[in-house]
Image (cartoon, rainbow, N blue to C red; front, side):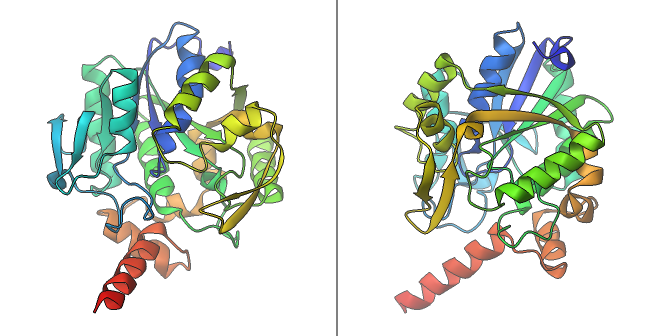
Amino acid sequence: MLKSFSKYKKALVIGIGGGADIVGTIPTKFFLESNGINCQLAGLPWERYSIDPFPGPRPFDQIINKVKINDSLCFAKKNTKTKDGLSFSESKLSGILKQRVVLINIFNSPNNIADDLYNYSIENKIDLIVGVDVGGDILAQGHEKGLASPLADSLMLTVLNKLNKKIETKIGVLGYGSDGELEQNELNESLGILGKNKGMIGSFGLNNDSYLLMKKIIKIVETDASRVPVLSFEGISGLYKIRRGRVEINIHPMSQITFYINTDILYRKISKSARLIRNATDIWDANRILLANKYRTELDFEIKKHLTSLDDKE
């Protein structure tokens, strides 16, 4: 076991990018649980626009069959869905695992989310939080041409960095380019910077147990980026199209590895986007700040896509 994880008893493992990133928490869940660490899973109520044409994450007041924890957190069960019938990836995973999954309301400010996560952690004796990004865009420095969805990752990295002052947090990156945003040389550059600054903790790959569970999950949960590690484990390599054929990525053995990273060093040395929004009042303010600094965001894309679809219907 990685020595850095040996002292923990209970972990909350969060898929921090939305869009079924929670599927990518499974290898970390197996890694931690195989070493005696009890795990609970969490994610964001934000599906890709191709699955949910509502722009942005779903507010808690649109979600039914949930169990409220506080203003930033609620439990999702297998029947948790939106009022208009959307079942979240987290709800489907809850049904498969037969356990409740935490949903995080990222409409709140990073400060409020961090406070609510801390209070929940104290109440439930959680001593470690791991945020898992699938694909690796959380490693973006800001200049990468393919970067298209930094908002959710940056918000949650900001939250976990604030929380890191009270409870230990770490970042996991699975997929290594499986979302089609950062090129492999860009990922390599960021990991190199992290390594030189003692920001790398270790890595862990899929095993047969995590592979079989992910294989089962992706039959029910629609995902591109979290499907790639499964394909890699099966020995598939080379060019592969995702996003319904619009984006081409490269599958390779590193696609099935989760790299674990020091939260503070990632925040300080790599993620300009997270630092920019550290004092944002809510998701709208964070989105405005990133747009003003020449970032593209997934929320802006979805709003424009939604407005275009409404125009087409008129």
